[in-house]
Length: 239
Ligand SMILES: [Zn+2]
Image 1 (cartoon, rainbow, N blue to C red):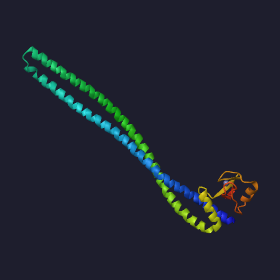
Image 2: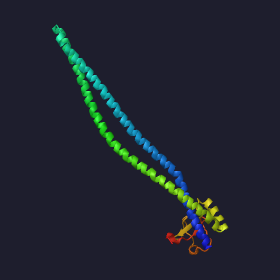
Image 3: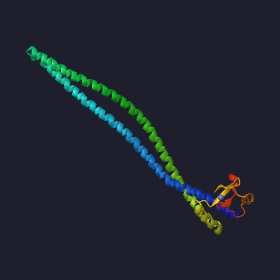
Image 4: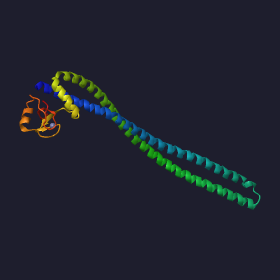
């Protein structure tokens, strides 16, 4: 019996490991998806900031062309100065030049403001790009770790499944059947250890005499409360 209980205990531990891997296999793809989305979001953010900068630069170029047009007008009007014949014409031309100069001045001011805005945006963008690069690197690292763990899981899964098959045949048939039935009813846990006189499946105390018997691992003893098969694994210390 002792040997059967030992084999079954090993099997229970394997079943828990396999269950754990199963849960990870459900969870990891979701985590990868979440990280992918985070990467896309960060890239989208930087793309929008770049677009804003490009659009400002475009506006600035347009304004510079407008300024040149105004300056041309001023030059042309000034060129006509020699052709004026009357004082009235002279005054009119002066006032025309004045209007063009005012327009040019306004555009120049606008260009200056835009250049300040562009400089500020460029600084922010450079900072953001650094931050995003760091974030993306971290996300990439997280993804790499998850993928690595998934590969490890596959290897462990294969090994443990093989061992499980062997154990399933080695454990005495009736005991194994009982274990399967209990596992099915009790969230995959059919066999539990007892620590500090407490069943580790339902955390209810077992009677003192039963606790003494369990520690011998010589007979099939089941928790009076949750019915699981009890096992003594030396209070959790490695044997
Ligand atoms: Zn119990």
